[in-house]
Image: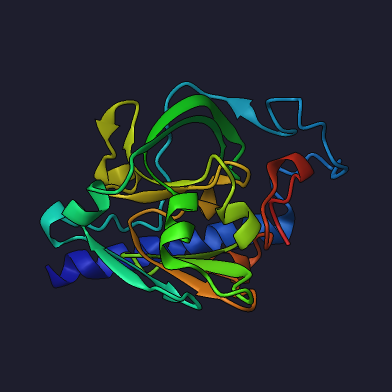
Length: 222
């Protein structure tokens, strides 16, 4: 078991180093970072796929539903913690959206089910100064999004994709979906949603990725 953990650590470190090199070298950038027309469904530099590639830090937490919980706190009037049953008892939201990965693939028409971020905001009542959100994963991953992006009408905390429960490899039991950004902003294995008053760059943002990640501006790297 110790050797297995050590190997996972080495694989994770190698993956991170490779992606940091991509950021330094501007890999995959088209060289045209002017704003693309958002009516163009496929952002510049992307290729369309029909499968769903798996990308992570080399660690895929195994969180049984009965032991999963979601904490929503920070600068809010009514912090809460949901068990799986409490999360599933919330009004259920369904949406279809495209996803765009910074590694240059896109997938159209993904059907998501979960809890709308707008419902979450209504429940916890963020304070006026809470302008940013930090998403925390069970794997230690973090990423930052603006409150505006988090509260978009198509943003949610998803438990299902295409009518089936999210698989472990794709972030199940629950992951964030923020369609207006590259997919690294849609953190997997969500454990905590933290409302803050100042931007706090997350795991990839401090390692060379762009702080926002808008695909139509080709904001791959900072």
